[in-house]
Length: 165
Length: 106
Image (cartoon, rainbow over all chains, first blue to last red; front, side, top):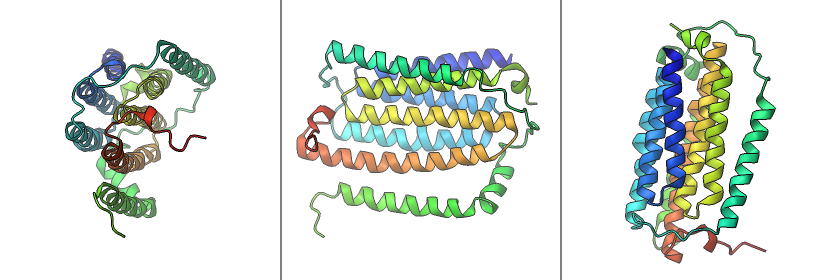
């Protein structure tokens, strides 16, 4: 049962990612990527990481992809305007990506004999993660807040029309 | 409760993540629209996130999931700044074609 659910989610996420890469219309690409993100969120639920699944949907599907969609609409790119790369370039890119894939699979194959630890079903729950985040990882957490502030200021500054310093 | 550890080997997660990462690389190399290139980078980050979460669950250690949380923070900041830069580029060149952005090329 779990294996079947995993297979369906994995297949759907790979197909959605491929459609994202190969669809001509950028808006369709965004929609397919959101679909892939939902499938990955399903995998998080399967992994018993409920907090991550919810945060993933809120941050990626809810914030980042909406930002992408907004920019696409603002720049009026919601039609096929992209000139194609040459067939030679595409073939080279496919060979490069395929070689990387084969190399990584070959390198990782058989390297997963990990000690199974003590499986703990409460690892991914909000209570446990919150405790870890606010005790052991509180300094990185605060630094992440500063990073967000810097990114926000930077995005506003870069997006301003007439920059007078 | 955690029958995924018994029924799905960790190898499957490794292969799935590698495949998603490879698709992201393929997109970065083939597409010319800078927005789609950024989206492919997001997909690659997600492949890594999935693998971190899988190992975290299989090892019963929460630190992998904390790491995923911080990667999400960085991805959100990266998307915001990247899209800001992209809008600025579009204002100057009237295009988001990355092959036009070769001013720094030797």
